[in-house]
Length: 145
Image 1 (tube, one colour):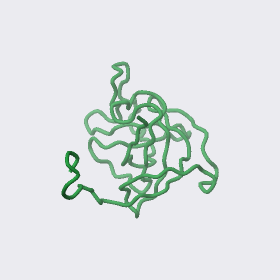
Image 2 (tube, rainbow, N blue to C red):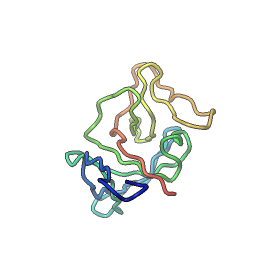
Image 3 (cartoon, helix red, strand yellow):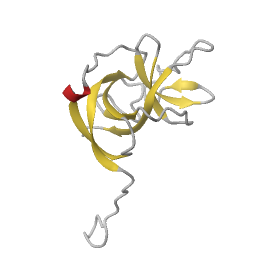
């Protein structure tokens, strides 16, 4: 189809395009505090394709490079706050009990870690029994080109 324009174009059709509130930014690195939108109705909206219409979606701008193999700095991630079940190799926005948040990948053997071209980033240290609050699972990352 790309070469000739003939035939049917492949379209995944797994979900729907939704306008989602861009509520803040999230640190892809150490836990960090961000200014957030008080009212979602006041937030800028961004369109995310192929999202589950049954989800509870927010969008966040990524700052930092600890997840740059998936979401480079300034990319937008779409987070389903209804999806908090841990899945190996899935990505999440997590927070501590003080409200500081970060964006990381979950691995059962190593915990919350980076997916980065920067070798200085290491897995997020967690004290024994100190599990983070899972804000939601990241299901889509969009970059500007």
